[in-house]
Image 1 (tube, rainbow over the protein chains, first blue to last red):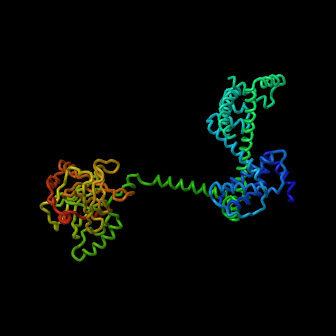
Image 2: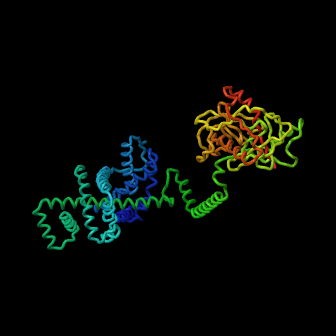
Image 3: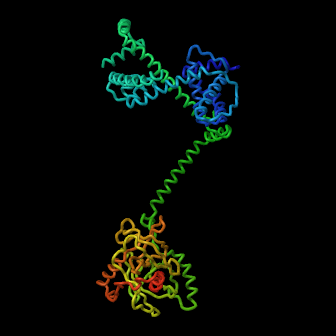
Length: 187
Length: 370
């Protein structure tokens, strides 16, 4: 509790993609989550996946302006991981010993938001992956790596930025088509 | 093309990159035209999704690099092993990784250098893959001692004093007057004696050595030798059929040894047509031994075996004997009198034990000395 003001600052930094902040949170909490997952029928890789999912939830939450951390950061991460892992165990048909290691808080709403977002991200991921090359790389350079059209033109061997732009729009239209064919069904 | 322009406009509108009058024109268009309005809404949703997607993908990359950084420095556990253990190993690794890398590269370079040397100095592949079946010098030397000790009681050894046995093998009669055929590689030395199955030694002279076919002819020159009028077996010109049952007699030890097998290929090592491949057990000392078919006809002479595989033995086809003797007859009067046993073997239709009993008198142990 003594760290609470620091934790708020830490989350603000995390929301701004500060990798130092991610490192601190990672360092302080990963071993705890690992111990929990290992003691509940899980492996190292599963613990890492669960922990990173919780980090993404935290990151997304930190980015919303209304975000206020109502508990200790450790408790929050533990609660999210615990919920996520118990759900995963259920899906896999494995059982948990059900031992509580730390305090946990109700995080059902956050989990629900997290899962819906995962579904949406999955749709985008599949749409991008079924796009084929060079469209996939071209759009990824623009939207994810945030490269300029001039850089992209040079990278993909287009004679000028306008040509690259044209190609980008063609690709974009295909991607949108793929995306919405899935997204509407999901709604 | 129009779609592209429209998409471009929608994007610029949503990004707020339109100029004022352009924007009002576009907004008017949008309010009048419901399909364009729908497209704007749709694209806005899409862009939000894309932004979130990009954002989380970038964040995941950060998480991955943080994870590998922290687990390599030991600040978080890097495996399922208990913390201290993992941490210690990582610390040690970090401390010594430079040394380890240098040591590993030195080891690698040394290994490469040594294997290069080994390749450079090792003999050609033929020699390493094929093993001649003459006996090892040491082995022969040791057994010679034993034989000599035994023979000392009845007769003086025939090997000249001061000479050492270099190699050993098998030879068999091709003419009852005392002409023997063996492998050229068996006769590593200046002279040779032959020993029959009962241990009697006979002096012999090397008449000819043909390194090309790996054949050699010996003649027994010894008053103790009693010529054999008719050899029990004949030498066959035709090659045996694939799968034909074969047997051989030879001296891998001082005792005569019988082995049987079959013809497994009509050509020899690497497709050599002058020899054939047998499947039977042969050992050093079998070189020069006769290969009989089931009728007791000589069809080949054992020469080599493949070192990597068991029971792959190569034998020179018997027509090489005819070829050698025929060519010698034209150049050397000594061979005029040699008469190779042709026609039907007297061993035909006998059981194997009787065949061997008759044939073994004509198979000799060769000891080449220097």
